[in-house]
Length: 162
Image (cartoon, rainbow, N blue to C red; front, side):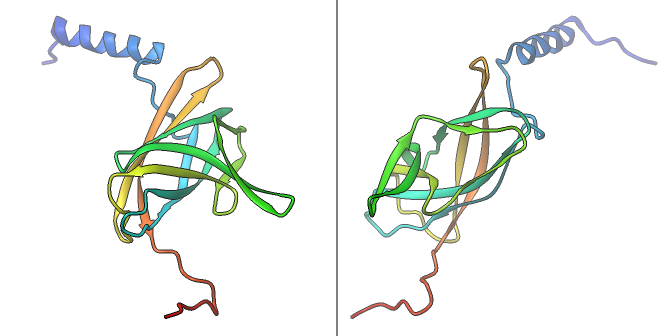
């Protein structure tokens, strides 16, 4: 025998549908954004900043507008460029993610900077990182992933001096 859901269950289901439709419970659709190849650079003790990288692919026109993590006091999107033989780095308020295009956040280009680290980032650990995306019209969604921390290998021929 089938039982009818009680009034409270029907009300909660209806409220969830309304909240989802209005964007209050907005979550990124898996087809809307994928984040792959994410990693953060291991840091030395006392180092207050770190860099992180990822590959983003949007199934809809989006913008990356923020980075949040308990591992740092602040996360920013940064861009490195060469101007007149001088390397420059500047914060970007947002990063356009065209529909269907792959956008790489990589060393030497656009990347994530983490400021005021809570503790050093140690190779082999991971840190939760929330990517904040914005759709046309201003509606925001968040996607949280665990980002592995990696030790960066030195280039061949590089060695330490005593």
